[in-house]
Image (cartoon, rainbow, N blue to C red; front, side, top):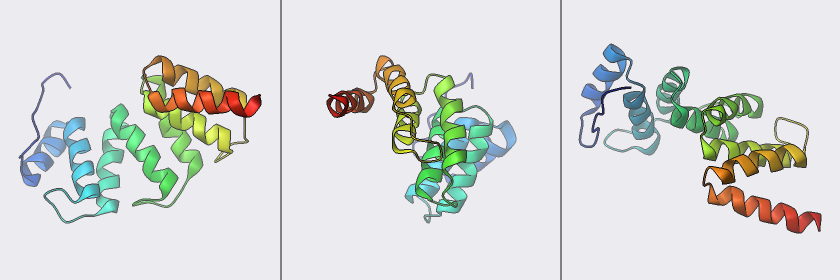
Length: 147
């Protein structure tokens, strides 16, 4: 999205208009967040997931991360680790550090994939390089575990 929009204080109907008419992935993300959190609207995890998924299909890395997270925890949608990994990989390929960290966790725990500490370490290293403090902590814990 080339034009910046300040969504704070914007009414839901105006966000929906932006999302529907302009295919504004950031507006879709904002709608997803609001429905999931109940900010200025009645909470609805399912509706929030659908808005986030729409933004994820438009290559919005934050939405891809949130979709993955909702799939891991089964919020607004059935739990599905394999699909979560798919979305985390797409966001991670765009340099989304938190998604790379989540990929490391899923590989370390064997959630949706066979447990693989080498892959987990690789994802955590990439995430740490991008400034993810949680990934740095995960790397430290992995080192301690292996010693």
